[in-house]
Every structure is written in structure tokens, then in C-alpha cells.
Image: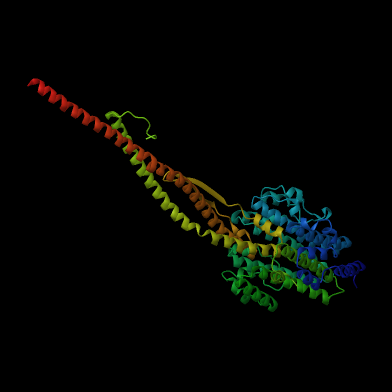
Length: 344
Length: 204
């Protein structure tokens, strides 16, 4: 028997899911002849509040992205504020991915000796922030950043400082942030309601993230050490030593070293697309799978707690699709090209 | 004549004019040699400039790929990933080609693109890295062409002035003085002869 709080959350997730745009609506927007038509369409959706504030002429790719990220952040934290107790803790850990993305952006800028402003970060309401972004934005070195994060969930960033300083590659820092976020989420699943279903959803996501990481780094010719250090040390269906076992294996042969049938299928498709030079589509293969998996999970478990997370995954999918569609239209890309990039 | 100015037709002036004339002729020959050398250099550089269209085409293609990556990943992600790549460092020196100072551009520190994990962005960065090198080379060539062409234009004007104005003026002036001196010599010779005849007559 589920607690009323969880039933309430599931019910709200069902209601909120109705606000998400359907594939047909995306296709309709895709067929629009101009950005003005897309703009008019969006004024009749959940995005109207943000779009009505900006005249069409002032819309650019940065503004468009900010709007969709703002809406995504609102959707995520709206769900969080309705939760309490362990459910809330789990949702908080899930929401850390936004915080991690912001930290990643800061780390990249510090490494490249560039500056990053608060507007370039995804908005996170102050009460849900576990780190001081204002102070982090002023950091000059990664060591200084790690020092500021020593009392946070990302304290283990210090463990990879030596590797970072030796390799001069911020990917190890980014991976460590991911490891912290996914590690804490994985730990919280231990006592969660619908634990197995949640483990299945997040485990698949972590596996696919690891596979994409290995494939990308192999494709770009990264060192084996970087490949190993950037893999998340949690595995669901993949062996923990996957990165090590792929030492010396070219990216084309990765599918032969994976046993789980659906992963093999995705990898084969991804390797094929990468071979054809369709790299954006290659990366989208993984996102497409995880979002489809979330949709299937939602369909199979409409009355389970996992539905809430499946809904949140769909929010991420919509944000990505909306960004692709509107930015694609704004940059005057071919409809066919935009369609290939959409996760329908 | 106007170029050389008013010079008295004396032997001393003739000698001085001849020295200057020989100096001017030598200078003209040297300038002609410099002009030919620079023209040769320019012809070689103009051949290399034909790559510009290809570079522009490649840049447009890379830009089209970048637009796709921005649509797929979002502008902030792309700019954030780009921010992880430290700035490339370029060094410029000035070298001299036949007295014309031209810039030489060299990359001292290439951007490290292995900090980019994303496949499509890595590919674009790789392409742009190569194109940046070519663009720098092209900028160097264009600067060379511009400076050499400017120098060539000035040089041509100088050679033309020497060839068409200075040298003819000097040679004309020298010829004029030579003619005058010859006439004077002839007059003196006739006068001496005449005096000699008169002096002979008086003796007899």
C-alpha cells in the first residue's frame, strides 16, 4: 500500500503530463514555414508566459534556450516542492543533474580560463541549491572550486585533482561530478518505494551514459586512462570493468564486447551512424532510447512512484526537443534535418 | 632639361653629371632587379591565394555542422564546451623580403581539443582547428601580398620616373654639354688655326 503522499505525487504527475507537448504538435510546429508561426503556436502552450514577455524580433538562440531551461527547471522543482520525506530526498538527488550541469559549465570555463556568468547557468531556486554558485563563479582554479565544494555532495572532487592536474583534462572533473550525483541517487534508491523499477530506470540511464561516454571517447581518440576515469562506477546491466575491458578496442568493435541485446542494438546503430559521419544523430540514439524507455516505464507503471520520474524524464525530452526545433527554425535549418534531430 | 636644372656647360660639370648619371643608371638597374624579384614573389603568393575559396567553402561547411550541433545540444552547452578549450597562442614576427617588411604568423600553442567529449563538437573543433591554421597562413599571405603590391607600385613609379624622366634628362643634358664643349673645342681649334695662319703670314 502506497502512502497518500506518493499517490498524490503520482496523480499530480499524471495531470502535469497532460501539459507536455505531443509528438503531433511537434510535427505541426516543424511544418511551420517561419519562426513567427512557431512563436504563435507556443503562445498557446505552457511556454506562453515566457514567450509573451519577449517580442518575436528579440528572440535569439540564447533566449530560446533560456526559456526552455527555465520551464524545465520550474517543472522539476515544482514536483520537488510537493514531495516530503524520503520521496523528497530522492527527488532532490534526481534534480542534482541540473546543479551538476551548472558545475560542469563552471569547471569548463575555469579550465579554459574564460568567464561564465550566472545567466549562462540553468536556473536553480536558491532553496534547492546545495552549493554557492556566486562564489564558484569567482573561482580561478579547479583546486579552488574543489575547496569550495568540500562540504557539499561533491566533496570527492578532491580525489581526482591530482589526475586532473596531471592530464590537464577537465573531463575527469565533469565525470567526478556525475559520479557524485548518480552515486547519491543510487544510494537513495536503497529504501525507496518501487525500488526495483526505479533502479531499472536509472540503471539503464547510467549504463547508456557509460556506453555513450566510451563510444565518444574512443571515437575522439582519447587516452585509455581518461576513458576509465570518466566512467561512472555504477553498473546495472553492464560489467563494472567495461571501460578496462575495452582497452585497445576500436569504437566499431564495442558492440561485440557488450552482451545485453538492446544495448548491442543501440551500439550497432550508433556505430553505423558515426561511421556515416552523422554524429549528432549518433548521440541522439542514446537519448532516444532512454526517453523511450521512460515512456514505456510510464505506460507500464501508471500507478507506481516510478511514473513521477518517467514524467520528469519526459520533461527533459521535451526541453531538448523544443530547443532543437526552435533553434533549428531560428538558424534556418532544413525541416528534414531538424526532424532527424528530434526525439519523436 | 628642367629636371637637371641650369648647369653651366663646363668640363667639371660634365664630369660631375657623368658620375651622377652612372649612379642613377646603377640605381635604376638595382631597382629593376628588386622589382623583378618582388614581382616573382608576388606571382608565387598569388598562386597560393587561390586556396582562399576552398577555405571559405570549408568554413561554411563547418559552420553548417556547428548550426546542427547548436540545434541538437543547445547554444549554452556548445559555448560551455568551447570554453573548456584553452585559447590558442599565436606569435607574429616581421621578416624582410628585399627590404619589404612582411609579417610571419606562427602558432605557438595549439588549442587542446581532447577536452571535448561530445563527438559532433569534437569533429567540428578538429575541423576548425585545421581551418584556423589555414586561415592564419592565408592572413599571412594576404598581408604579404598587400605589402609587396604596395611596394611594387612605389617601386614601379620610381623605376618609371628614372627610366622615362631622370635618365633621358641626364643623357640629354650630358649630350648638350658635350655638344657645346665640342663646338667650343672646334671654335678654339679654328681660332688657333686662324691665329697660326695670321702669325705665319706676319713672319714671312
